[in-house]
Length: 466
Image 1 (cartoon, helix red, strand yellow):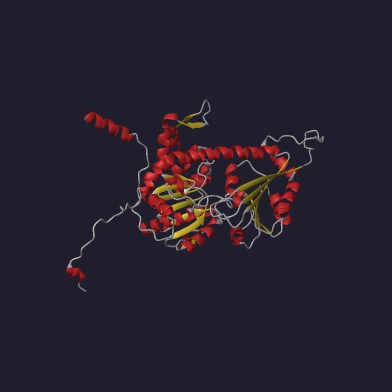
Image 2: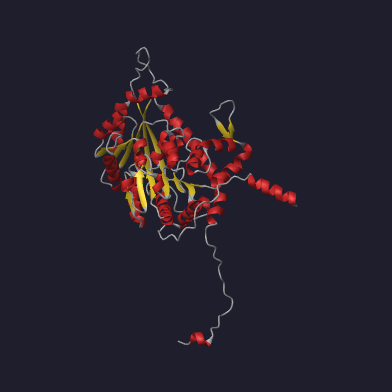
């Protein structure tokens, strides 16, 4: 018996999960859905957690309630870090749900309670002054060698309460989940790799999940992250969370084929392979693609969202499309935020920008038409850009128009291949974590047994008097 106890203890010691380090939440008075309230309670009890929820599931009101409770508990302000224009959107959501939130550009602007800033000015804050931090669109951490990622991890390493929120935690590989675990202080990325992964073949750059460690890996993920695409995944009613149809139409424009090294005109456009060749093809087809995009955008009076990747594309599209407003990287922060919010309220008909500038975090269910003036090879950028409009809360069929030249076909195939891989990865994450999370999250719910009376109650006479 003693040997069995010792062996059971040994097995338990090998059981790797993130232990709760939070506190008991207060009653939630905000008008959140039941499943949102339960997830917020779960995240508060965890102390350090991630919400990997699909676009439109209400991550913003959940992070606002989490921030409010952490601020009340620690008696310190909480900082929400978000992409630039998302800050104003988050404050608008705060007002809608009954919270008070302050947009800040430096520590001197910070007020008690909930504070919001953007990643570009994060160095102007003192992390020790805050009781907790929220990373909105935390997929910024995926660039594990990037300066911003390391700055964020170092800056908040001693923070007791952390929350990370994104719909794309690992757009390319399971390994990218390690960046979130490192930010939350649960496990470093090298520790995660050595614990759950092995080198794939002879390459030291490629890793794959150990076969025998698969269940343990997903149990570990579920101990600190919520992963789902519909509340039904976690046992809630998800009937209202069905996306409208998405129609993707590719438009191929013809270009001059004089692009070989000898200057000879080629009868057919060659298949573009290298990145430099693709860039050259995009420049060669710019005029034709812009013309086609403008034709599509000007054929309707509805709002249109137009995406591009080149500065010359952006300028030409703004001139060619009726009522267009351009948002570029060189614009002031004020112009970027105001233009994007104006598109949100409908006062701007057509918004022209790049996915890396406006493709994250904004809620544009008011628009159901998007146009891509060409495609880059980034699936995450494409996915996030599409999901600005095609998200829960969208009532209309969403139309995506992709305009490429006859020399760029391989780009669309690359995006489609990456999309299939990402869909498979998301389904795997949900499949392995949902049962564990159901028990964990539903465990925070107060259990109420139905009482079925079988006898009539007889009240004493002294209770009846008066």
